[in-house]
Image (cartoon, rainbow, N blue to C red; front, top):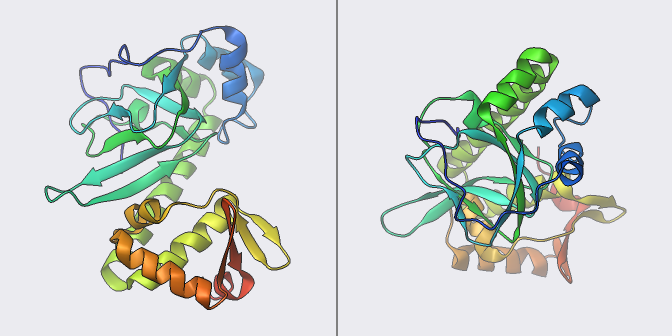
Length: 245
């Protein structure tokens, strides 16, 4: 799960950079969930060396064995950590959305174990390791916030591993959709609305299953009235998510 550092910093010269100025960098920092209550002085410290970068769908931000010698804030779009097998199978270990700060690369010291790639076009803010560490030393309360986020991510990874070992595809599909609804969905009288429903392939990658099996499972849940597609969104019925811990 960890993003870690090696001796050679990641080279982002291959990406088309966004124009750097203080205003967009500060606005990007203000979108960060973990920095929501950070004092203005802390944001100004992070802003000094941070750089906005454009990312393209499918573009690789870092490959296994390389370094990500920085913290990464997802400004627009989504970024995933993906593990691929020799037979072509893959699983999305983690997915980060706009506002998520991934600080592993600034805190750990081991090579990357997974590919990090853009799910869609967007942008990220790269905060150099030295800049983030200086900020954490000056404002140690932010370290507790980042530590809490790392613990939460570790727990999600443990749940994913447990699900792969102990539950069938339908249970994993339901658990993942309910989790998406609870994280990003909008509650309504009929259930949770996932505003941007994942494709069947994305869902398969997130739960370690093949697309065909996920397709059959989703179709059956729709037939039972437990899921209701609504354009680009998906309604997870109250009956379905209330039965998931």
